[in-house]
Image (cartoon, rainbow, N blue to C red; front, side, top):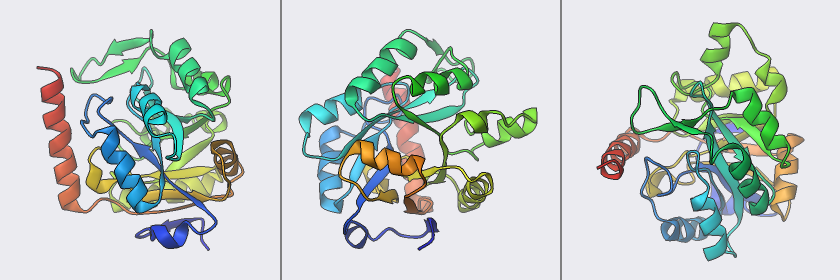
Length: 261
């Protein structure tokens, strides 16, 4: 079986002797999303998958989900924005480690984005955020690396500096909000650099949850993340269909306006 497959996940086939997890999702705790935790809890149960809640520079969604739905498989996470507007996914073995990382490095280090009034970011450099996550046993992943404004690939290429590749744990090989071309390029880059990898839907609406998943064996969050470190996992997924992507973008813009009224 190929490690990274572009296609439709068959959840019920995949879940035999495996954990299947959508590693990138947003809730109403994010500035651009209003999807409720209860809806994600129902949806993940119906699909038979786990979830990593990775809200933008916020952990309320992940913490609350763990408390309210302890039987659901949750990977504690966050999508952190560096000072240069690059997005890094952080995953932790325990909620307490996520909380400690957030308290020490994000909570009091947020600032308004200069060109986007709806978005905040941290005051920390990408390299520093990566190093800080390791202090809490976390793993770090370049999110949607080929997206021009927030992805890391173009940034490193323009700087002709690829030193961050030595720091980062891995790369998001498939992100459902990226185009087919961008996802194929992300996959190619991941394989070229021989880095660990994940995949996730980057869902902001319920309809796209589970479009991309990460699969591995193990019974615990710690086991699952360790398999990612060792590249003993698979990713299966695809880009959102155009109408879901349009719906998602429209929803994001509407939510931004509502939350900033």
